Image (cartoon, rainbow, N blue to C red; front, side, top):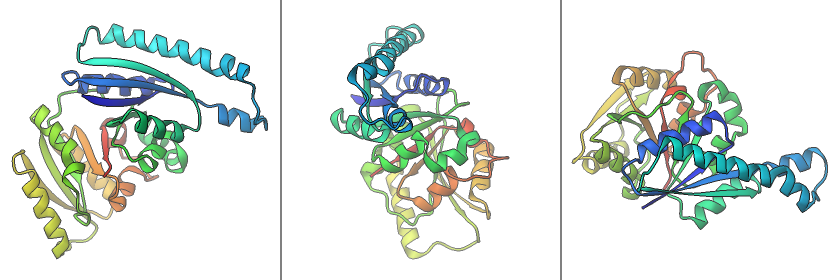
Length: 280
């Protein structure tokens, strides 16, 4: 059984993420935790009042949030009725957002966090401190980012960008294998360089490991040369009809350029394609 954490602010983006993951795991036994974190800290700081009464917390934050969580459960029941594989729990807490998420990841032994995002339109803000950016960089838990335009369809092509500079352990890569097997999908390992340079010995070893590890899955290796990594990703996503991009968080060089950049005029994969961030 999988334990999935679904942080929600009751927005359309968060609902889109919920809708996506319920379809994604429709045939998998899962426990879903709907988490709403009350933004008390921001309000308290803005009012220079660090001693907000418990009554005010209850009236302003807790009661309305509980009602909205109930409404959300009813909406899930309406759109996804009678799935015996799924169970749901609601959590409403007042805390720093990241602290609340970390606590739930530990207490509930969460396997995956699912976050909705506005994608490219909000990238500049994403870099400097959105909840999604904080989660994928500060919480060591696999996270699926579901952008605003992403709608679930059976996965066929998974892109895995890597510079081959990092060794990925078996446990880290296991979620990719599960996706490949569950959907009978193909993995496209993508290496992008700004100059046409051959792999060094360490990169060759890491590539060989990936080739061995995915030997029982349909996979292939692709090499692109482009001074702009995000443009190369965009081209690859379009030409290969990529359904999901998977990356390992510790691969910061690729990770930051692919997900966190500010020139977004011609970049659409961040608004269309789910992004799976894997942690060791």
